[in-house]
Length: 581
Image (cartoon, rainbow, N blue to C red):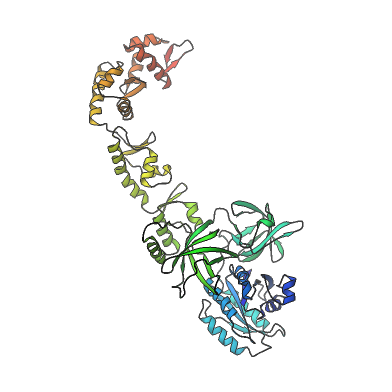
């Protein structure tokens, strides 16, 4: 299916032309038909001679209903511009064409209606010349009379040619369906309609609406029930779990996780504005219209603070409408998660960045380099592709070369921490994480390289050196234990040697002493020596027998036996005797 929208001045025959092309009445409301004036969006469809199905969104032409017009035309890629032969180009025609130009619409066909009232040739030539100066360029034109039927077949043929040149929609893209109508059908419940510009929606899908997910019960397209509808299409979705009172034009149904709601967005205009920009424009996208506060950054770059968050992506096209003047500006979304601007000159620098920002993978790589680390799901929800050279670590995406940069930075960070805390083997992982600016401690595993290692919740060197004074005191203790391995020094001896709790803890972390229990420290390898001496006893043996084999005191023997039990060297029996495992 293809979808186009009408554009043109009130009473220039847009709805009459739609009726002539489709045989359907696009005006839905009795008041519209009574007044002969399209107030809200109308919809009609037909099958062309080639078999192509065409849906037409008929928009109101009166200037009072420009908001409704924008809601109808915001999701379509092509337009049917209508100018009456007996009236010609008007201010409202210019406004509608200005909207199409601001949207960047490149595909259109011109209909000069009421050809039975006046000679259409001068209007046809004038309108085509005016359109040639817009994004639509050289537009084919057809003179037509909806009353006599003259030119209707030629118009259908022109539409066939127009549709054949439209770019193919991406049916695999995430769904973002801007709602243009919401109503209730007895026996079915809540129904919404919209133009599906990309993606595919199916019965049974779960779609996000604001901060919750809702179900799609059934799908209709052009009045027929279908299992699925792929872009481009006019669709009606019967929703489960939401009341019609909870919906409004401008709400969006989204593929979960594929879009980011934002109230702060950086955009760029097509060129330097000729007039002063409105401080509080109305921002239009799809069928949505929200107020905003505008801040000019530098040149064509702007920052918008939206009154209501919108699901936007990099590359989206916005319309900025001045509510106090008949003026619209087109703007491209450049960032949906922009940095704060606190320092002097930050706005100017940010504007300069946006002025040279590229789209596609190059732009994504540059944006990732600025962010350094971001969740992959968040990055793609912004609208960026994943750069080929980026590094994926679990749910995280790291800029090209960042892992190596951090790996080379970490040793200096560890050395500085050890200088400030000489009794500790290295910084705790959370200290290292903050020092490197990483959002998740799990990322440290990728940047820790020998001789550094992750050990006991810290980033430490493989052999943590003790301060010289502590090193000498520990060497003295170890020298004494070499001759009598179970003669653990008393607390007074340790204190006299300058080994307090912090120094002893550092010696244990460095592997130069073994803590058996509070106040009992022995040399590494004591477990093997204890096993060797116990092996000379007849099993089972008592703690007293073990103490004699070790030639030590109960102060050492009791906790040492329990320490050996915990490590599986010995097995405690029901009568409190032991045997070697």
